[in-house]
Image (cartoon, rainbow, N blue to C red; front, top):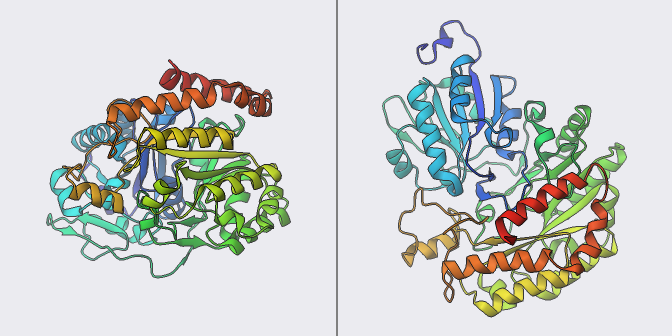
Length: 481
């Protein structure tokens, strides 16, 4: 095995592997969130996409998305040795943490390389995390930071603080930097999307021609009690940078992408500017975005412009079908606004998806049934019923910690997507009761004639039908049977 960082002797570029580690199930890890995919869908990790642009010119770069490419741990360790990888930057997530730790510990033990991680767990107390997991050398708390370049180049002789990075130096001292970006407008080179297996990613509202993620902004100006994204600073890229990235995607034959922004229209004028730029550049693309039911209604010209620019799906965080529950988690919307937003999208012929949370702290049997019934009334193209997950740095997590419902802050496994024994109990319902309601919700929503007759015709095309069949089979295995 070569000595650690022997490349410095011949002044060559360091070799960096961006890794989405293997797991037994389809765990999604990005934007400081982690969950099990509810169906067959899976998207490109936006953290790694952004890092591929930042690191491209200064490092010899490799990418492995072990989940979508179905690569095993032995494959990864052999790859690292064969390509003499110096630095591994890996995603981790609370939903998959047990498997992630096994992977990283094995890589550290069998390969002589530096390991940095990004994911929800890095937002926890760094001293505690480093103390528990000595095989992790660095934690990236801001994957948009351009200082990552100078940090990686300085390894193993890092001595100063770097924006968005906590690390263990060569004297085994923990260096922590909680400083945020100093400016709202950030810039980084376009991601190296060509390094990712874009043709293998799929979402049920796109066909089988491949799909990418594009991040035009980060963080969210709202602060729902349960969401980590509202705890992050709101940052955004220039329209010019965003359009350049979209153009680069079209040159490699990918015309479908999702804006992974927590809230695409957080700034209405900027959202309209991006849409107009897509139209003016005659980019024939198809995209989806995350939205709020109140912000999407603020400007009557926004939805038609989004439609013209290629928006084929808007994903709304509905969360609950009871106003008092929405108020209890500081969602700042109500049922009336929810209905108006879905109606407006229907008017402009933009399909919708709805995210619903089962098991919010004040949920009971009646409120959960209200949520399921509201989903049926709204009748979006896709509905996802998730468990509540106590994300790091959120007000919800602080409350659960004080109540001693969470006893081990670092590395305790939660999974909003589903699976055995992963639901958090609410004030009135047990974990098992919430898990039963989740299966009931999926069955009641999708196995009804009202859904099939409205939505299924949209997907009866040769390029789309097999995506939908895979999605339905995956749902059936998890929730229908």
